[in-house]
Image (cartoon, rainbow, N blue to C red):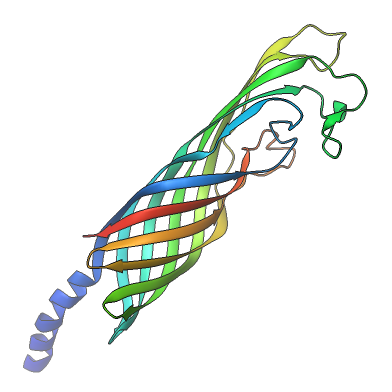
Length: 225
């Protein structure tokens, strides 16, 4: 019994040190969903889809032997805000994404101003190895995210027979889980991490105004406390 107690006391600090905090700061590049999705290439548009990204959470080594190990990460992630501006016709049927031109006479152009962000919980496993003093890791897991997207539309006129209107539409749909993966390299307490996320909104009838992006790539510097 005495040996068991001594063993428990000796291993307790190791268990306590196995869970630590970490934080990341960097940049995100959102990928839009293409011509006809909140902008039309035939008309002027400006998509500002590069934003800051921050995350913070915990890390725990699940396995470690020599220079090899496997770590678990649980982090809150915030990406945003993106901004878009476009001139486009109000009726999708009036625009041809193949020819990049109107089908017949163009309807009056509306002004479309969009803004939004993505945030959520990233849960990943990371096998890693130390190579010549550098820590190299590969992460894979899930990003459980929720998008917010707001579009202000000025002078919306789907037909010449109706007066122009100003509209506000948005997407604050349900939480969704998509795969995420990444690679990292670091030394000491610092890592540089490149990740790819799939984080698109639904396009079913319940969520009629989905966000302009379908996926996001981030490059961050991570500090492990």
